[in-house]
Amino acid sequence: MPSDQQSEHSDQPLDSLDARLLLLLTDEPRLGVLECSRRLGVARGTVQARLDRLVAKGVLTGFPPALDLAAMGFGLTAFAVLEIAQGRRQEVSDGLAAINEVCEVHATTGQGDLFVRMVARSNADLQRVIDEMVDVPGVQRLSTSIALSTPVPPRVRPLLERIT
Image (cartoon, rainbow, N blue to C red; front, side):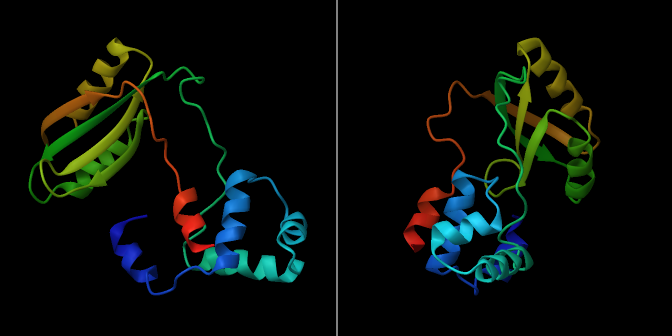
């Protein structure tokens, strides 16, 4: 979630039932409203109202499938720090979004201006992706690191468990 949206929603914390519902859907995203209500011990209407509120608040943004990119043939994950020309963040972001292997782009403080997570099929394929990124108008310099492993994968469970 972009940082400008984070502050917009920070004054509306989740309660224990919200957190328990989100934990349930994190573990089993294909559960229906009725089954969620049964497992949580609350009315179906309560679960539906909570889901609607979480969507309206921007907390729950969808139910995408969890994909293993390596199993899809993209066994290499890399990160890049980009330095860009001043005032061209949107243009560069749009150019990066047009590269299929670019998974995420974050505007950052510190060294560089943008932090990018990308995937590739091989080292040669990574070089192709890097070349595409360097060719985006406004990109001045790029530094890349290859991920060797992911000891802590993306997660939200500890944050939700703290609320319950």
